[in-house]
Image (cartoon, rainbow, N blue to C red; front, side, top):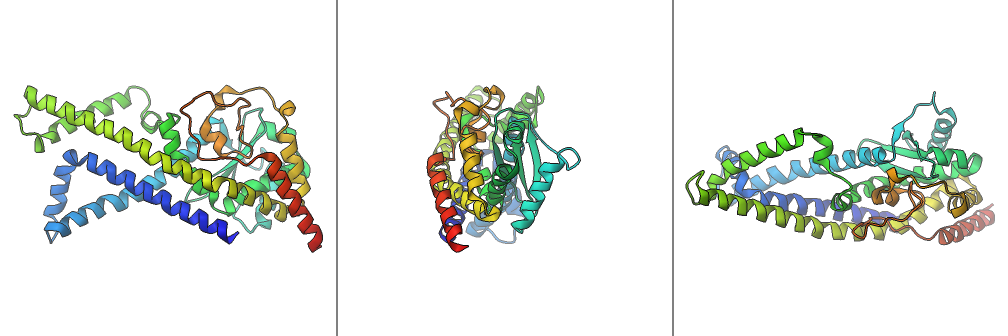
Length: 351
């Protein structure tokens, strides 16, 4: 377990390093338009030269990194729940579900997470984490398919993802791949309708004005405008290429952690409940093709599938998008069951 914890820590550190690289690349690409702000900051510093440049980069990178990580976790968590039509539910609406989560969280010495229910017939579950807390999401299909010890076992599995902090790490790791896939569009979500285009035109106008600092041509002239359009096109092109380059290691990191964390959550859940057989039964039931309800096309998202208890997500059909990339690579169910049976034998020997 300590080896897995170290791997998760290294994964988190590497994800943060990639975030720094993303922010630094964005800052470099936006340098022509940030020059006025950079000059204003430099004018207020008591020193100049290299020290002023270092101070400028620190002033940009540190707050931007904190804001970027916070925004990724908040946005990814909210967007993932929205994709499956999940909503936070209280104990008055789902008393049995809340009682189970509260009881298992107490056994695990864990602050009880929020509980959300997705209106989907496909039985599955997942956990998402932010810096301030976590949420366990279960589908109506799961609640109607499992009960008793089997439902406890699945809930315990999700709680172990939260306890091990890999729910937060995997939530963070799923942002860039989903952005690259086109599943996430933060600007469209934050500024729906025509407001997005108004904001875009305003930003384009400001960029045009600020370009006067770097373009050696009369402001407003044809040569100035063509130079601006070329600079803007280069920025967008290299920005897209950089996003793809930075996404690749995130996918590799997520997948390298995924199998180990799935096995760890299975093992920890079995030890928490003291009933590995219940998790085995749950896996066999949920992984049975004959028992899965029909496809729900609203939730055919690679990002959601990557976070789920079983890899089919909330959709019974595999994605047909050849460009789809996922950060999780689930181990085969048969291998998970084999390891759980080994845990059962260990518990029997210990008792």
